[in-house]
Amino acid sequence: MHDLVALADEHLANARTAAHGRSAHVVVHDGVLRQSVIALVSGTVLDEHNAPPAASLQVLRGRVRLTAAGWSEELSAGALQMIPKERHGLTALEDAVVLLTAVND
Image (cartoon, rainbow, N blue to C red; front, side, top):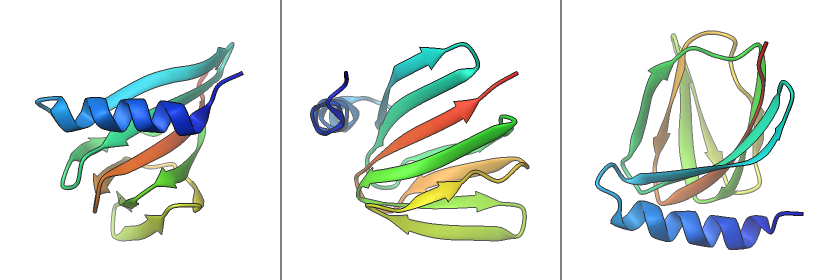
């Protein structure tokens, strides 16, 4: 069992001291399923990247902007959003921690 609150605290603290402003940890890896806690300091951008076959993003803390071609969505703590199937990016609008759930081939 994982304590998401403790992981969020730990990785946000790590992100605040990291040169690139982020910290991540895979908490579940079972076959094609992967869940990762990702902490980002305000202003940090995860550049546009390819989408897995299926994925969702849950905001545990803070606010982020999820973007794809011609589309963006601002998400706050408590929000759960499916990841677009096309290339997408993520920007921390304030210090934030997200739980990324992905299913890969």
